[in-house]
Length: 163
Image 1: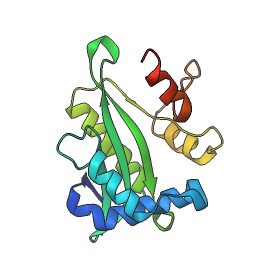
Image 2 (image 1 turned 180 degrees about the vertical axis):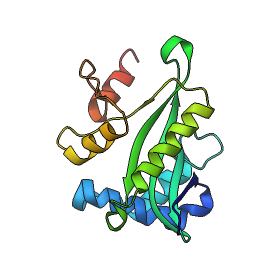
Image 3 (image 1 turned 135 degrees about the vertical axis):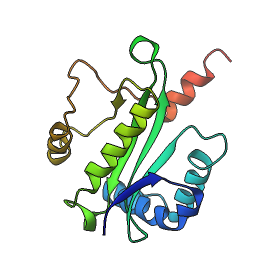
Image 4 (image 1 turned 90 degrees about the vertical axis):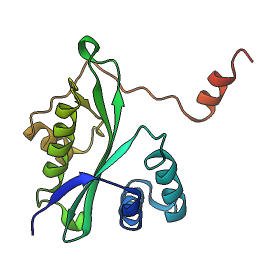
């Protein structure tokens, strides 16, 4: 069977939640979100009418093999939009079959159709196989950029400043 990639819908939740949980367990171990928490987050952040994020899913024979979560960014180069890919994940049992490439190609096509000038994402520095995979697609590292994050107490503190 052929691998296809399409935009996910809320009807995909029964299959998407366990796949998301697999990724959570891989990266977070015992601190991974529960399936109930994942379902709730996806319903609010991806499938709600006002959600700005969307998900692409790779499937074969009605089985979800992987996903990519993307969000629009503006402005990018010369006032054009861009896409940010927050997560891309392929189930461990489905790796090295072209699923990741199919997902990345679908992300690139979505960016092109939307008039985006680029797709950006972050990769853990110690993930050599991911770095090699992205390089094989033509992606390049931006050594001059540093990923910054404001979260937890620091986020709350800054949000409350001046109140």
